[in-house]
Amino acid sequence: MLYNTLMFLSYLACRTPRPLLLGAGWVLGNLYYLLIPKMRRRAVEHMMPALGISETEAKRLVRASFINMARNVLDILAMPMLNESNFRDYIEIDHLERMQEALAEGHGVVVLTGHIGCWEWLSAAFTLNGMPVSAIAKPQPNIQYTRVLDDLRATIHVEIFSRGTSELIAAARALKRGKLLGFLADQDGGPGGAFIKFLGRTASTPLGPAVFSRKFKSPVVPAFILRQPNGKHKVVVGEIMRCPNTGDSDRDLHEFTVQMTAIVERIIRENPTQWIWFQKRWNTAPEEKKTGKHHVSAGQGERNG
Image 1: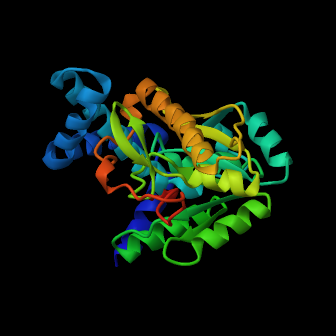
Image 2: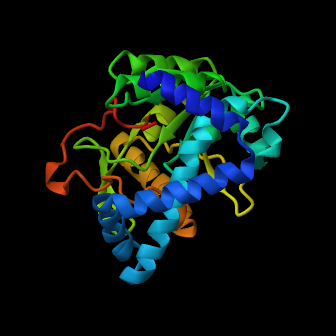
């Protein structure tokens, strides 16, 4: 029942005029801001010290972020209407040639991104340009939501590996086959992550992008999708990065993760209304840190859907 309802909403979203869909997102975002006080408070509490702003300003920005999030949900539902002939009406890309250059090396590409803008549409920007994209997806609490998301992603030709299967082997195989492998690098990395400063606080940060880049000699390319005032989306592709190899693997992985985290943080600071501030980014305390060699867990670099 839930699956059919959501797919029917997707059908409607695909056929709703763009201005009306954006207007619906404004209404739903404001309702969410008013009706979910726990999320609102957590977002404000995270934003104030991170950006050094007042509570009044934080509330204003958080409300705007909730509106963007609601619009993102509607855009995800509308994803099946994107295709090779029309996606440029909705998405523009800065420096696509950087991704093409990295892909041409033949070692796959680690795409560094985060829960910024409508990140599901980021995949569409590349697949509809003829690039193969794979990603590890975290199953939703309700399997019906997972089915819906997987079916919507399939319409834009994204290969999904479900967490809890052999996803790390599948992800490694994707890089070996020369595909783009997306990592959402703004999540809590758990006890095995790198504990570094993120938005002013020490946070466990996923090592997945650095580990995969080093192991498979894959270049890392930062890429973020940002919602524009006119309702379109702009993909910003950064400079190609490479994991250092000084002979000290732990230090190399840590320092490279610091570099990548700084890029994610800069994008968030420049676009504070486009990040999900209520996520539990600082869940793992520094005293929970694991010692020993760095490793990659299934949770490091997954999609949250």
